[in-house]
Amino acid sequence: MTRIVLFLFIIAVVAAVVLGVALVLRASRRPKPVSDDPREILRRRYAAGEIDEDEYLRRMSGLSQDW
Image (cartoon, rainbow, N blue to C red; front, side, top):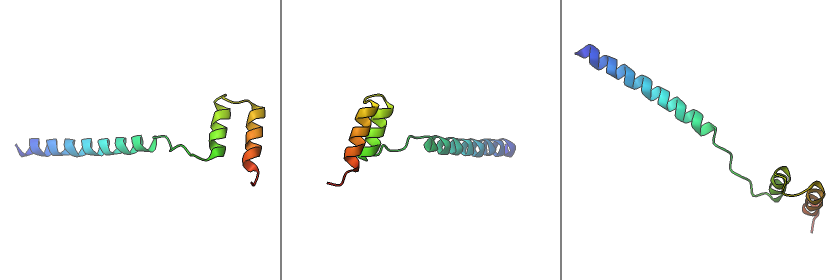
């Protein structure tokens, strides 16, 4: 009887460790929060093909100016 309880305890510990490692790995793969920086938004739009190179450069130039 005690061998069965010990065996089940060992299985539970191994399962808990495996589950913990899986949760840590899953959490590390979550996408990073998206930045609200105007330059970053502009880079993403250019990369997605929403705007062309001329529009990208014109808008980036406008963001670089000190008003």
